[in-house]
Image (tube, rainbow over all chains, first blue to last red):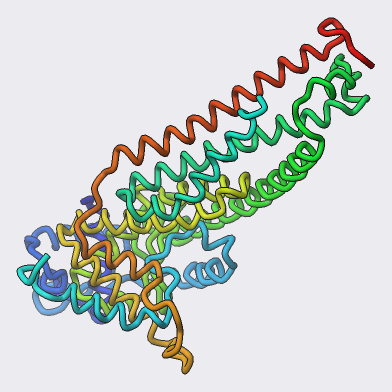
Length: 120
Length: 310
């Protein structure tokens, strides 16, 4: 797993939080075993790249995602709306969903949420 | 020649027909490679066979025969291909050429647009771009690629599932899945038998990205939950009155992917792989053979060869 993956993960956690987070809060929001210094280094790197902004919050800094390039995001929307010719180049996380999938997905989600000891 | 020239179509039909099943049964990375490369190989063999069949018709046209210094009459006598078949081949070839050109133009434009978008988004290769608008997460290739996810989707997922989503999208970029999809589309444009290959490759590359994410997290169930939860979120707005009577419950790709993640990782099937490669190889070999045979027929139709009846 590369450095960029961790940077994305931290960015995602900041975006999901919706408010500035201190490094300690980011560490908690990542929900996995990561050293505080690793989180700190990643935040500094993101700050150096202008991907996040920071402000003093007591003794630490609180970090927030930098304002996204909204104009580009709007163009992105147009690209997506451009029809199948365009979307074929883009890889989507989800595709071809049907309303009839709701009960099946709900059942599968419940199955996936069961602790692993429950069977395999 | 009589048989060999038709063998590539058989190979194409076999590969095209098996594509959806291969995409489901083989490990996804293997399936993606096999279907993209094999599909294109089989499509090229078919196109080449069509060209041979069509050539035997065109070569009978007196002007062409004069230019090529062979006898149109001798060729007609020696050519084992009925005129009807040759005309059909010519028509199919023209359609394939038109479709291929159109697809290429469209895709070159799309790839350029994606690259321009990535440059404009900035942030470096593979960077996450958070969107305000709540749209489905996508990976955009070009200039190292960017991952676009809505703020709402990031907030809706627990940390592990958020990580699974990001790892999935990154895998699309790292493994250049758009190239596999483009190859499959090219194969389908060239060869009507490959019509189901692009969807099979799309599915296989999605599964591939799922498996990469599962390996990275060391947790298949987390990726399954991420997919299922995202799916349920995306479905919420479309709870139309007719939804309750909709047919085909659980048939969609997302459901299949979640199920695959809840099952053990698929094993390699060397025998299946070898058999498919053999079929494609035979198709390509037959195409080459038919071409060599045609050259021979033309040579014999030359005035210095067999005496021309015309």
